Amino acid sequence: MRYSTLDLLRLKQSADLYGRICRHTTLRKSGRLYSGKCPFPDHDDRNASFVFDPVSNSFRCYSTACGRSGSIIDWMMEFEGFSSFADAVEALGGAQIARDQCWQDKQQKLVQDNKVLAAARTASTQEKARQAAYKIFSAGTELSGSVAETYLREARGLGDIPLPGAVLRFAADLPYWAETAKGRFEIIHHGPALLAAFQNKQGRFAAVHQTWLNADGSGKIKLSLEDGLRLPAKKIRGPYMGASLRLGPPAPVMGVGEGIETCLSCAPFGLSCWCAGSLGNLVGSGKPDGICEPHPVRTGHLLPSRQPDMASARAFLPFEARSMIVLADSDTKDLEALKAQLERAVRRLRFEERSAQILWPPLGMDMNDWILANGRDAA
Ligand SMILES: [Zn+2]
Image (cartoon, rainbow, N blue to C red; front, top):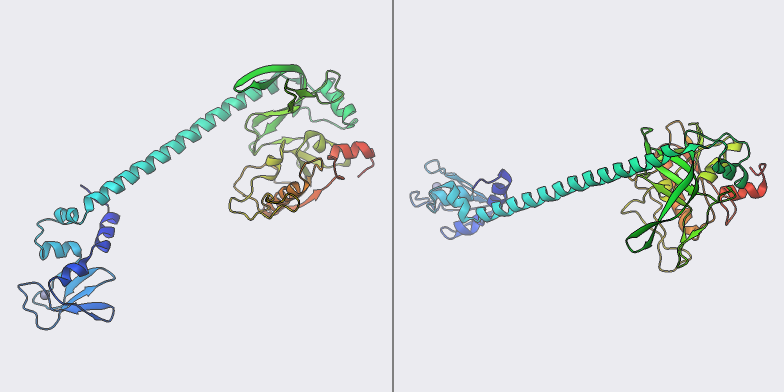
């Protein structure tokens, strides 16, 4: 059996050397040490030359004629007659300790292997999703002249603003998959859709944002299951967390928002915006051990943490953007929670040494509603 240095150290430190010595001589406390007559039979000690040190758990005889010293192992071999180091260690329970250690090492390796395996599986699943998303996006056609362009320019009131053709595309007949029963996925609709490409930090395609539209581009499609459950008109496919829709050029002052329409609505005012696609990707996660305040309206609930977890994924924003405007959508069910989350986004941006502020449209509206309601002169 081989023992690690650490195992031996633990064993030597934890063994009761004091008790073993006291069976053969009387030790008295003297300062931080214990001293007494040397117990070795061949040393007829009359001067209390023998010392036990409780800190190092070791003994020493200061008589030049004897001079024995060492740890519990030395004591066992020299005084108690153990013939080998290994025997002494074994008698102290070393084998058990080593076995425990060996078991722990194995467990640790197993956990580590599983983590590596899980990460590889996640990476492989994500890469498959990314490729499927890319297939959808690259199968799309130019936005120009499409129903999706009609939707943005007319239904969302964006007029003649330049639309980023590399990021936005059109699918004439995109299938919509939904889980119609537990574990059963079916195409419940297909029709025209606006496509948008998420790019990660490196500029690589990451995911596709899909917005299904009415056939005439007059608005988003309204879909529901037979039991009446409403389905979202927007879906993202691919690993988009940490990636963003680059709807405008990098600039010193930029906007970032959750929805494509909101972000594009800022273009007429000269504000270049990148889009996060979801609130989670806009604000990042809260610090795991962060403080959550009580919800001021919903008794017994806590607000989301305002403290950012800087390691979590959040929509990538260009370095050039030193001043960020976070675009809030006030058409939320829980305004207090949204405020806390956007505050987190602002704090995170400030940690990145950017200046940041939140732009709030009036209650119950998103930025696009607001601009539509007020016309182009609103801001
Ligand atoms: Zn001695």
